[in-house]
Length: 216
Ligand SMILES: [Mg+2]
Image (cartoon, rainbow, N blue to C red; front, top):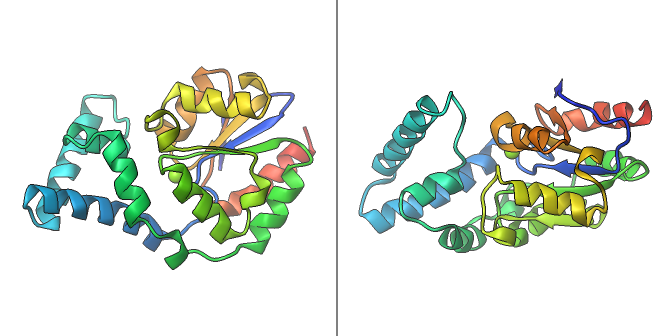
């Protein structure tokens, strides 16, 4: 876990979903594989050929953007798949229920966090997948705000998504902390917007974040 800016007064916690509220390598892979597989079918390529093209594109993009990472959603746009189409594919193909299960430790930690701040998720999956993921983890009722890929038709990092989460939490941007596992996608932009930022290694970092809130 790495702390960037931590506001003195915190009213909102804006979480990334995947790799942040749960860690499940197989589910992470599944989400990428089903989308790349669909694109491969559309292009008449094998999965391996399509995957290699996507890897190559993202590598070149990173080289020309100071090593920054590009989300798969934005990579799909570059391959001619509009975000609206990505949203439909994700809703149809991604199955959190096949990989995840209730996490009582996560639930009790998030429940305690709610004494300090409202909870939001900003994710590059559509809202329905985010709801199913949070539901499968057993924590859906604890989140008052979900901003998904379909909310603005924009993939993170996107300022409107983070600002909308803060607004719906009735918090100023400078009263929020963005929490995620990818600096370029989850943290860098919120810091520019005046929010706090915490880069996590996974759901196991939720307990120390609770301790941090208790000691502000
Ligand atoms: Mg993530």
